[in-house]
Length: 123
Image (tube, rainbow, N blue to C red):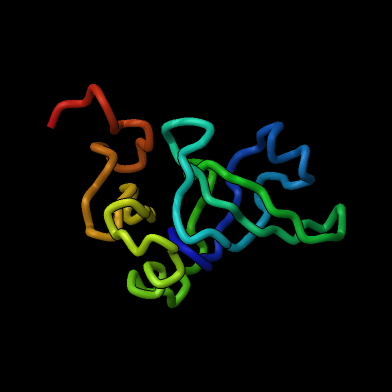
């Protein structure tokens, strides 16, 4: 998952429902890289067009709550150009269940287990 990919919300959570977004809604990732503000899992800002309310909604969604529907044509180079620091080691995308920086380094040890990385895990 990366910038401009089409995704589906696969979980109902209070934080999403507050913004009027429910499981099954389809949206577009509008953020160049993952954020790690709430937890170790990481999230993308996603733009949704829910049927009710009839407005555009921007929601930060945990990557484990998203399913890839359609990949965008954005390349790593395109994404790197969008990022202010242009440092490929600091910005991440999701590939085959792995959180990877733009250098291709995997940050989680177990695919699709997005909290299996960081301090304390052994190689």
